[in-house]
Amino acid sequence: MPLSDLLKISPEIADALADGRPVVALESTIITHGMPYPQNLEMAGRVEAIVRAAGAIPATIAIMDGAFRVGLAGADLRRLAETGATAAKASRRDVAALLNSGAIAGTTVATTMQAAEFAGIQLFATGGIGGVHRGAELSFDVSADLEELSRTPVAVVCAGAKAILDIAKTLEVLETKGVPVVGYGTDEFPAFWTRGSGHPVDQRLDTPEAVAALLDTQFRLGMGGVLVANPIPAADALDPQMIAATIEQALADAGAAGIAGKATTPFLLKRIFELTGGRSLVSNIALVENNARVAAAIAVALSRRMAR
Image (spheres, rainbow, N blue to C red):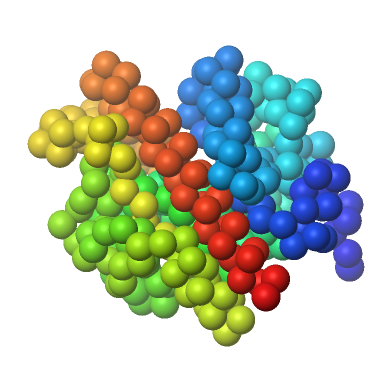
């Protein structure tokens, strides 16, 4: 059956896709759960402006009014921002129930990828992906983002995995699931707030055109998604020793508070924000903006390649 009643694409995005123009998907949990209103709305506007300045069209994605909304703007984007953390946080397992309920929900990496594929968008910019949580050998807490990357043909530009995770195990799972991990201008997998994690990427590519060539081949083969790891700009990175100690303190606080499951990541990010005096959020915003810029450049290169 057609998805027309469950997928609402804005006229601007629909026209761009029909014309083969570059489009970059943007997730919405950073709007709903990343920061309060009106800062979240201002941030969303800046990220969209960066994508446009780089020659692509931004498509912010959320679940609203019983449908995936692809290309939120104006009053609807403001409504999402004002709803904030009272909105649901939608991963793949939640989608059908949220669509049926008519609830407002921010989409995670996994669900934004899903909606982007439905719409025909091949590039997606986010902050950092989810992955294998520390202690997952006991909790089995592994993000749905990794499974989505293995099956959904969308390229995700990110600043690596969130540093609160077990990055070594996250990379092992990505390897097992056949997800290419490309370092954009780096040989080392970035760790969100810092430029390196000590772990190598599968391969390094240094230009949007080189990444676009790889994506073209990957998608024509039907081999699932690609992770493009783009380090946070050096000027915005946090001190590695400081953030490592802060994460350990936040993890200890989470354990003491009995935090587990899907509540873990929001708790840790909030606690790290508190412990760093807000510096973690400033860096988070900077890396999201940088990822949007790189994703737009790759989308432009891929669009040109497809038009040949």
